Length: 567
Image 1: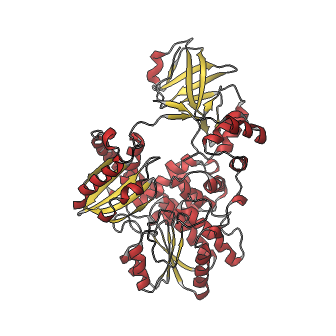
Image 2 (image 1 turned 90 degrees about the horizontal axis):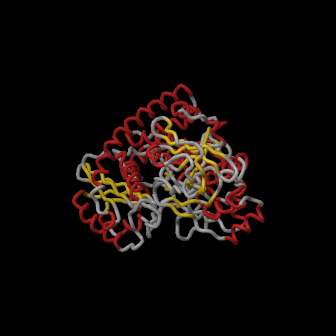
Image 3 (image 1 turned 60 degrees about the vertical axis):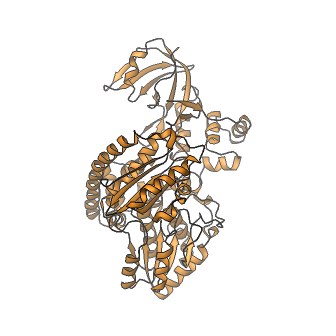
């Protein structure tokens, strides 16, 4: 695989080293994350809850708090209307818990993915109206529900929209809209997850009972859960919320999270982003993907450990079913994708009547990652197409979809992820329009992504303790704060290479200052190309152990590199 060094700015790097008293490789890492001034760098190194922005800077927040305050005063029935993914479920749980604490008459509604689909629907609104609901508060949805919110008003219901998805040019006629993505919203940080927007609302609501830390301390675990699962950039407020949210798992009072840790094999005292993204979120999502998202919601609100264990086990079984179905769909989609001329078309658009709607989002994500280009997967059922779209840096998928807006029954999303429904007979026309839109984007090119190397670093250049400390400072790693990749040149192989567990490559290397053991995961096939005495360059990522980071005298060869130069 190709790799390249990150761009350098000697002036900024030297300024960071001098003003912040940090090593040069750390200064380079800060610069590589788009940080170019001293204050921003200091805030990144030492994130504080006190640095969170005033929630009332977000457009609609004051009116939203006032409307909820009236509902509390008059005893109105409130329904928190969520989404069936982990972000939406976490956001729903967070707002319900907060409103309960404030004494509200509150219930929740999470639509059935397969029977109802995403977002507000007239049928569900009518059902809530018949049940006596006075005020609907949407979380992680609603910003594109123009017709549905108009229908809610016709029934006499109030609607507050909280969302983080990209709005259309015309906004819904909700009583209040709280969404940092609104064009005229002056809120400084735009990239909150749905649960992040709800957290800001909960911060603002705390003033109704003079409880400054109403949710700030007790529910940050939910905020971290939804934020990580939604793959938003781990910078700015997201970094603060996730950093402190992960710490709060160790002492969480939520038996549902403890049960989820048990069934997932995760120690909550050492939980990290990977655990959330690959163990917790898939299980919570599995309920919604296979049908019933209420399982995940009930798990998060459960107060009985026995009940929580039962729900967690059910979600674990749902996840196993999801994995089996996903493997089958991905295999079929991959075969079809291999026949697409990506260099010409620039996008993967596939459809089938055989694909389970609950897994198409994951399949689209994996294809987009594999080919480094946008991917749209459409599941056709009873004459309707249900699509999930995923994109890559530089291609705004919502902009691409806008050219087919008149063809959709519904659509919405943001720059990197979107979804739509469409009548089956319109799919061919949509494919033509999307391919035309992609062809006009000269920068769109499908290729295998190269590695961006943070900096050159000899393993002996810094002590293990210093390196480990700085990697913990930079954590949590995730989108736009990736696990760093370094380059070490002229490492001498001082012993013959060995194969470990039939497929991994083990090397003993000597650098300028130290001898290290390097493990190349899945790179056993390179053994025959190497011999004792060779001088090689290695690209490596730090190894994670028990939630901590450190070289620990072992340097992990990056498993995506075919090998580097032997001289």
